[in-house]
Image (cartoon, rainbow, N blue to C red):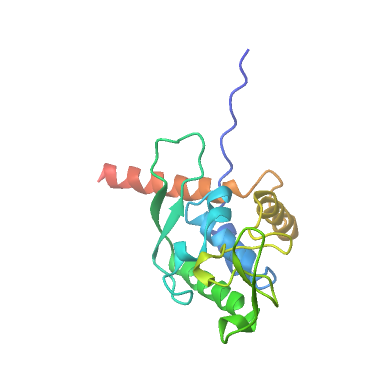
Amino acid sequence: MNTPTPLPLILSPEAVRRLISDPLIEIGARTRFALGACGLSSAEVGALDIAHVSTDGIGVRSIIIVPNRDARRPQLEPTRRQAITDDARWLIGCWLDVRRRRCEHHRRLMRTYTDERGVLRCAACREVLELLAAPLFDSRESDRMSLRAIRHEFQRVRDMLGFDPSFHFESLRESYLARQFANEQRRGQK
């Protein structure tokens, strides 16, 4: 006998608002959650570079470029354009400001070196010298934040806020898609 696939758990708008506005949650995590609430999967959030969300590393686009990271749909073009909310734009802008304040090389010339892959990096912080080429979310150990770290961070915050333990990062995207579907249904009934 086949077991039916459980329906995805949908976060309420109040729960999503709490995830992206709670001051106890660090700005980077709130930014990742806001992007998830705009319809991005954890793989897509992890794949974002600064150039995907900004043309100069300061201003944030209202429609970002999302790299295709869905192996189930290889027929899709390499990237897609995705509108984001004003909250997500503001959070990305705050996150970019945090990134620029980490090291002086964003404000003045610093010593650089070329790593084993031929990438020019700051000698002080080891970040890629060209800000737009850098990953939007980086980690201490590598250039790009891993999907496991993004998902674990959501679980930690979910537990901290007392949400249902069956929620996961992808619940943000599922909630977005459910709202979009409900809006389409309402428009179709009119």
